[in-house]
Image: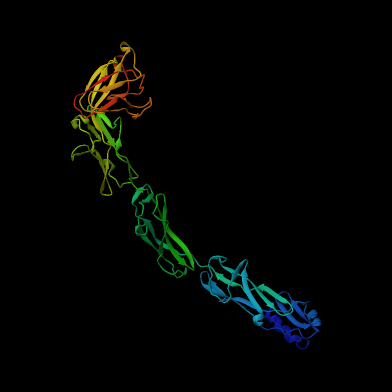
Length: 444
């Protein structure tokens, strides 16, 4: 186009008052015989209407606005830099811009040709140039395709080596961390770039990038070997680990039929539960202590060995991460056991210390009683009554202190459970607790 405009001016010299191309600014519109003669959208001449007709131009009212727009340099490899430029000769009354769709480029500002609207492909990248001019009469605007930026594809980086996570715990192909593990320090191996120059990389070794944290159970942590080449980040290798929950050790508690008050002929069993160990705890090495400083692997203890003494310092111990964790077990009152047969009124009983009492009733005794009353000698109250699932109180479903003597009324504890010899347990077992030796009581 530029050569055509110069040839045209040479051939028609005297016919044209003025001629313009990409490098020549047209004169102001002062000759009324001349017109703005446009050849397409990119070339405009200020010439006579006759001359415009000869060259096949189109007279328009729009003033000639001529500008150049291009990239410097005009050819780059993807990831290199280039500067968008737009030049004109119209001074401060005109402003230019270059854009690709909705993406505008800052003129005369160097930018990296990578990402966004740029692709790593061999291509002629064409943007639109716009020049907007203002004067006292009217606003003029001209636009055109700028000189293409030739982009040459950059090959991706090639790698040697790999990375992995050193594990805190391993299961199958999965790697696990404990909470608050230092993920970066657990990265092993490295990745090197075998073609750093050809791929325009800023280093011949990939850097390690950690994504995710180890601060909470269930988190996923990833490590990437990242290379920056031609202004673009490439993830060349990766490793992944999962964060495990903290260890949980339950309180020591009763197991089986053990409870707070037990017969001296019974066996106490306790236990603890270790959750989320994942190799951190010696769960096979849990130890128990019931008396003194003797630790044992068994969680059972024959109460006959207690000498009818309260077990108030039973403990369970487990070793996790090289440190012992000890849990205190519930206190157990050891009581003697007495089975009372016959449900007749005025039954006399003598208790030596804490005693568990069971009753056997049959039809010969007039049938199961619906409640019991126990009154003992001595000062009020020199004993207490305990029944599992019941509390002391004043209504019919409570263990009720008698208002006038050293005694208690028991709630209705009927059961249909038949025992040996056709007897019934009635009521449920009760516990008589006293520190008075040979406490004599009567039952009605």
